Length: 195
Image (cartoon, rainbow, N blue to C red; front, side, top):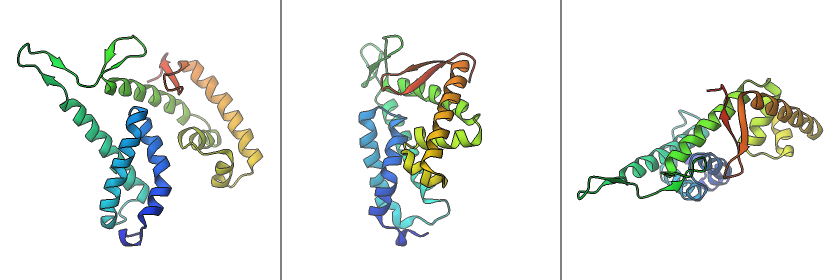
């Protein structure tokens, strides 16, 4: 599929919610919207150059990953050394929800990323049917009807699979992690022996 055949409005409508969720897992909620706009600004300017060497989704997610990397670089560049006392000062700080200390927001995101990787590792070990419905529901944010359509299954089948998958996931997570809800009300864990 070449860039000339792609309509930006279609691309935006199709991928914006997914990219927004992807970014919201990597940065603060307030920054996710700004970064989503930055991603689609880049997509709009580069869409005509898309050669189809990878899938459109892969290409857009790569742009999103680059936008996040640029944000991290920008954050690091905002640390400045004061010539008077030689102290390093961060221009963006936020309280650490675990210790109450002041940590740069990017550190909180790294902690959140490690927890999410642990959770995803447990999800990857689930049986295929359970893993599929959990990923579509929890990671992609699809509703039960959309999952049924995607999997070619009935709505009732999806509801049953999702219930069983959540029960299994909770059991497996409890065995490996101390579970809690974080400041964003997302499921998070402190590993017992995962990672």
